[in-house]
Amino acid sequence: MNNKKSVVVIGAGISGLATAYWLNKEGYDIKILEANKEAGGAMQTIFEDGFLVDFGPNSGLETTPLIRQLVDEVGLSNEMVYANDKSNKRYILRDGKLHALPISPPAFIKTKLFSAKAKFRIMAEPFIGKSDDGYYQSMAQFVKRRLGEEFLDYAIDPFVSGVFAGDPYKLSVKSAFPKLYRLEEVYGGLVKGLIKGAKERKKRAEQSKQSAKMFSFINGMQSFPKAIANKLNDKIFYESRVQSVERNSDGWVVKFEKNGIINELNTDIILSTIPVYVASKIFSKIDSNFDKHSSAIYYPPVMVLYVGFRKKDVLRELDGFGFLIPSKERKTFLGAIWSSTIFPNRCNTENAAFTIFIGGARSPYLFDLEREKLINKVLVEFKEIMDISSDPIFLKERMWYKAIPQYNIGYVEHENYFDKFEKENPGIFISGNFRGGISVGDCVKNSEKTLKEIQNLE
Ligand SMILES: Cc1cc2nc3c(=O)[nH]c(=O)nc-3n(C[C@H](O)[C@H](O)[C@H](O)COP(=O)(O)OP(=O)(O)OC[C@H]3O[C@@H](n4cnc5c(N)ncnc54)[C@H](O)[C@@H]3O)c2cc1C
Image (cartoon, rainbow, N blue to C red; front, top):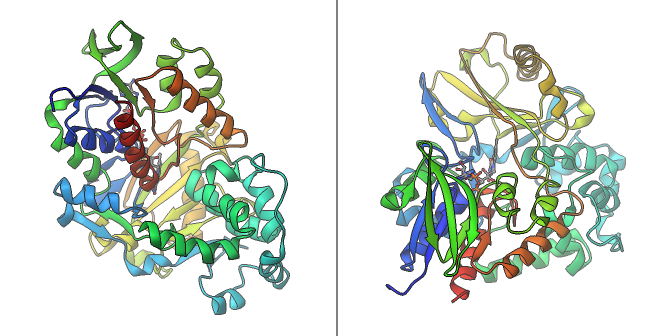
């Protein structure tokens, strides 16, 4: 136990905490430095006036058994909740009306979301050959070729807004949706791949994103990082902002600022899980190419607007997850989650809670507008779609100036660079949601991968 190495983990979001928890269990001497007053990073929950507000992720998908294991080990099993069955239904706005995304062949035939021509084009997917474009393909290019333009416009464009707040013409299919890319690369097509891929996942005990259960916690998503942090209590230093990292004869020196004072920690290993634009300030001093790659990674701004209404004023049936808006519909916001339908305890039963997303890579310029005007414009559109006659009884906003890293075309080069950087600087590990996936599930999976890499260093 005692000869295990020391590790400084930078950042107490889910990526840092999950790896820190497992490293601690393996007997490593860990210390976690977190700039904020509390754990969670992008996972931020508040409870106010009877509404439970998640400003970051509203839920996660249980794509790996590691999530449940971690939840159980940190004593949070009783608080874990799964989404209401109703939330399997997802809506897309077309011509001002909400259409359920078809999830069965009869629903696909009946839906008015796609024209008859588009449906035939989608059904031709198994007969479309592989492209030679390799990994320099955008999501839009890939989908247009395999499934046609209308599917891109009315299914994929809103979908990538929902996941990445991204632009399908810029996102790299290989880096942002590696499983989709693999279906074509390995199996020659999506339908063929889905059938064979399901068998492979079964062997690995993994869940596909389509079939994985959606989870949260009675007290919101931040409960998860907070519960992990509680287990590591004496090892976390809050309000401790890392400023630089230097090599010394024994390993590394981490300098951080706390209460206006610069402190130092000597360590064998550094695990960085902070956003890449912050990591750049720290690691560019070791290798100037770090900045070249990190500054090319775009984090668009996103505003999260959480609103509560009296349920009786919402005339539309709340029978789904929420809705997404294709760019072609030209609305001011990206979509909305029907938060209290998915997890009923988000407010009392007389009210309904919604989370609206604004901006993203599609419309970052919106934030040039005066804040109040923007919010009012969004509310007018939202209320019309939802058939709501009154004003909200509760409203909270949170601006994420740099929300989600975009895995755009050319991302492979950044991924390769970070691999090279780690090899050239043994003892430094670069992790976080800009490598290996942005979802909570992917962050947990990657945290385990990082643990193994750290263990292999010895
Ligand atoms: C608005 C929004 C909605 C989302 N919705 C979903 C969703 O529904 N489902 C889903 O699966 N995912 C969603 N995500 C993505 C997911 O929440 C994140 O990708 C994930 O939580 C990132 O975790 P992380 O630990 O990698 O990074 P972060 O959570 O960003 O953690 C990094 C930590 O590092 C700290 N830090 C920064 N600089 C320093 C420094 N110099 N020194 C010390 N500490 C520092 C930060 O304070 C922070 O705590 C959403 C993200 C956002 C922003």
